[in-house]
Length: 163
Image (cartoon, rainbow, N blue to C red; front, side, top):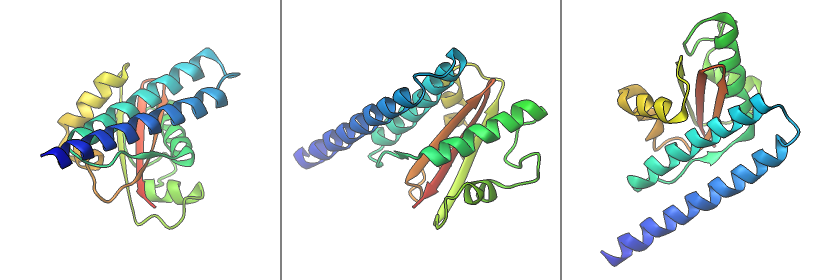
């Protein structure tokens, strides 16, 4: 029992460190960007934090933030917002794996994507993801290690890969 408690504390500590480091990197990167960009970044980080907190609750390792995946996720969210659709196939007929590889993430052993629209808060988005069996499966995947989150005009994307 004591060993399980130590493992849970270690995983929680790793999650906190990952979130703090990721947050500092993002805030530094976006310090000169617009208020809207800063809001989007806060929302993306919150979904990342909620996702990892849920994984840790079930003794799963936290995801590692991946900047390129975040860009892929943001670009797809922007595509959905601009072209008024919600789905994993892009307006250019690209699949998530194509977009991920086109961005330079090569060698992923697995990949996944969650998308949703017309939601204005990270908490609502995360709750809806957790209530969907397919989205929940991506969040609890044992074959994904890295994540990127994108938010544009109430359109949300999570990209997952195993590197």
